[in-house]
Amino acid sequence: MVVGGGRYRFYSSDDLIHWHQTGDMAVFEEFPDLFRIGDCWVLNLNGYGYYIGEYTGEKFIPGQPLQNIDFGNSWQACYTFSDMPEQRVAWMAWMRDACK
Image (cartoon, rainbow, N blue to C red):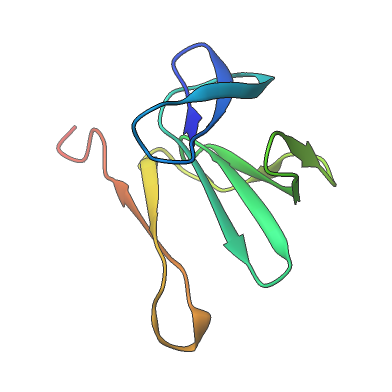
């Protein structure tokens, strides 16, 4: 599990009741999302950008620089839906300030 709201913190649990922190990362965004596509792991930073890298089960290691997602002003708090047919992953985000 990854938790934001300050440094990203990674946790592990064998029973989903008792958790222990396994690592952290100097990313200061809320609403993190960590998911797998094929052999790669993607760490989403609140919809503003993402890293592609490796997840060891304890920590995330970026394999390349931060990639931009938001090329406008209306992409925030995106979250993934996985386990879809054909191993697809879909992102859904909030639309902010749409009426201004």
